[in-house]
Amino acid sequence: MFLSPTAVKSMGLTLLALSVWAWPLSAHAEMAAIEKPAAVHALAMHGAPKYGPDFTHFEYTNPDAPKGGEIRLAAAGSFDSLNPFILKGEQAPGLGLTFQTLLTNSEDEAFSEYGLIAKSIEMPEDRSRVTFNLYPEARWHDGKPLTAEDVVWTFNTLMEKGHPFYRAYYANVKEAVADNKHRVTFIFTTAGNRELPLIMGQMPVLPKHALKDKDFSVTTLTPLPGSGPYKVASVDAGRRIVYERVKDWWAKDLPVVKGQYNFDTIIYDMFRDETVLLQALFSGTYDFRQENIAKAWSVDYKDQNPVRKGLIKKEEIHHSLPAGMQGYVFNTRREMFADSQVRAALNYAFDFEWSNKQFAYGTYKRSASYFENSELAAHGLLQGQELEVLEPFRDQLPAEVFTQEFKNPTTSGSGRDTRANLSTAKKMLEQAGWAIGKNGLLEKNGKPFKFEILVQSETFAKWVGPMTGNLKRLGIEAKLRVVDSAQYQNRMDNFDFDVTVSTFGQSLSPGNEQRDFWGSDKADVKGSRNIIGIKSPVVDALIDKIIMAPDRDALVAYTRALDRVLLWGHYVIPHWYVDYFRVAYWDKFGRPAVSPKYALGVLNTWWYDADKAAKIAGQTAAADKKSK
Image (tube, rainbow, N blue to C red; front, side):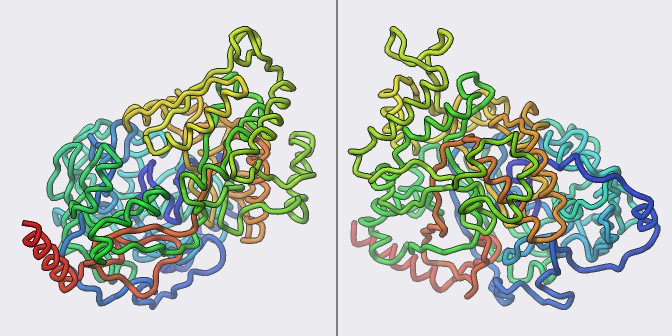
């Protein structure tokens, strides 16, 4: 399925901008372009794909899964657009179900992609270009053939009129060429970028015949035609969107989708209030919820009749996904947060251990890496290949990178020993030039230390409260501001905030998206994910190394080096993570015996169990009758 600018990389991270650094095409590369490489069924970032050319289905799917029934889902917020490929508007949930990409990833490998629209792939050894041979059977929902001309038109349209991220993301693509009706080639401006061919495989494909005469840059509530397993059945703007399975979907028997996309109907209802949203699950308004609030998971489900009677199942499904980094994120464009020592000091005002006990029943682990819960996370003192990578940058980095392991401030969790941490913070702020003024607030150059923490959910209010209280004891006035999702997105796109709560999702195969997270050339590009405003030559150089990593060992070393540099930059106050999905659902579904390692897989691998659903309906009807 396609990935929009606000979606996540197939392994769980946001897909974003391409590196602009790589070596230019050499004479060797030009000669390779003349030769015709062998056609393959799949690509891997490093090594070989897990599944061979004769595989029949992914191991985490049930090829005999029954089709039918519905699943009702819920989402917070609203929507005003069915075009997920532009900067304007709030897109409806689930739109990725209606589109296809040239390749699709497996959810039990770090980064491998298999043919979806493309039957096979051709690529020279230096990866200076990639050719996709399309399935002649590929069709749009209106029955018209999907051709190489559609692929070229999509690429050019996204570059010209799509979200700004596409222009950066595909910046190293010189051109897309339709070699014939079912063959398309992307020619790159550089060689050696191992990720770029896979990135082009993730490009969504749109129908030229249906969209060429329309203004692609504007929001719309008219569904864009697609070629995916579902199409939009009905829309109630901002409130509900319904998808129906395409019964004669051209790709339904391909190995990469066998046993997947089993629901006849998928419904999303929108809720503006998180409390109402949870109660709607218990009342049966929708069927499935992934719970992100620890207190709700520990307390709010206990006394609910459907849970006690086993009608709603609660499960913790473990996964191997990198947790990424969630935290209080500083906007370093603000003068008060330009000093890393100030940012580091404020971490001492967050008593995670106490808050974790009070608000999460001790279920969270404190994040200490941008690649937490993976082999990519930096641990211990700098040594080995990581040291070799960072040694040339020694004079540009804090000394602590080379002498200390990064650790967050800690407390006993009792709430009685915060004073020591605040004392440390006070000294650090004084060293940075902040002093108490006449009004009782810290001041520097006549400006008081005041800032706003911008969020789009009341969920964080209880976590923010104790921290703002600690900041007040330091002489800092911090206030929480909750705005709706549309206003929040607009302010993020324009970097109009002091501090916010955000997440930087990661995968097991970091690459070009790191440029948009931290790259200097994205710091001033509206809509980029470099909301922090990082401009660091060292970070840029490390991103380049990650993108051009020749093998897995090098990729791990480069990523750990980047992790250390980001951590000692104190760009965020780290939050927390869990290494399992918390899910609650009405017990009317079946799922494969094997779960995917790197995804939850509800919409693509689960199915509707008619017998279970009938049992649920009977018990619910009996309970309603009894209550009357």
